[in-house]
Image 1 (cartoon, rainbow, N blue to C red):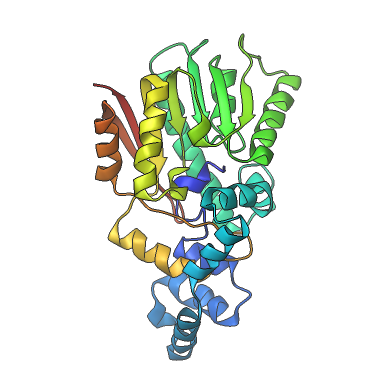
Image 2: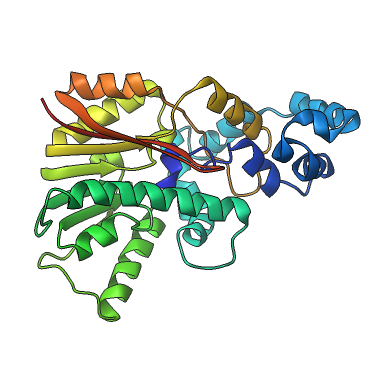
Amino acid sequence: MCQAAATYLAVAGIACAGTIVEASTNPVVSQISDGGLLNGGIAIAGVGAIAALAAILVSSDPSKRREQMSMDAGGDEMESVKNYFNTTGYDRWRKIYGETDDVNKVQLDIRTGHAQTVEKVLAWMRAEGNLKNCTVADCGCGTGSLAIPLALDGAAVHATDISSSMVGEAEMRYKALVADGAQAPEVAPRFEAMDLETASGKYHTVACLDVMIHYPQEKADDMITHLASLAEERVILSFAPKTLALSALKRVGEFFPGPSKATRAYLHREEDVEAALAKAGWKVTNREMTSTQFYYSRLLEAKRV
């Protein structure tokens, strides 16, 4: 599962302006992206564009679209997520997390924002000293944005993702870096396709970045409890924060899904995530916020009480 999938609004096509840019084949949407929402408000777009936009919003039904995806996967929402990240989602996020110039403004902004989140995690972990043989589970590793630098720092990394395509890409990138001269760790990283619920073992640190966006709060609580049970010293989570402003952006963006953004997305209140950690016996000791134009991610580090 793409790491970006869980905590920033553009992940599932729910950043308002970002979604509009990528769905600009619609003439009304294009007009708004050229002169309306992107430049300070719907009012600038003009009365005609607003009326047409209203018609689109009335005729669109994002909930039915998501339900159809789930039905196509046998009613299993997580299976639909896996299918997405093994097909069109894989192609999209491989580009975003790569080094290619073949990305648009929104995708480049997402790449920048996600990289900032990863750097914050790396800074937290490196600040505590040598990572040699430190056991780390990167759950929802995506293409390896966090797992690979941790492994090259010497950590013993188990990188998992619901998408076999994503985790295969991560392993390929790691091996390419080693082949090009990067120092391989004493304990080679393991890359394995599995969902969060299947993850097992004991690790010094368990990290899960930008994955909670696929879980409603009731399931997110169970997921947090499970991930915390795998950690001995530290849990690191990131998620899309649920605020009034971001919830509004999400709602508008859902009406303009674009061709490659089709999974359901959930925002989470920081106090709910912190409460789930506390219930599992963990206390938040560090917190950060990454905000770019189209990427919003709350990052928490927790340690045992």
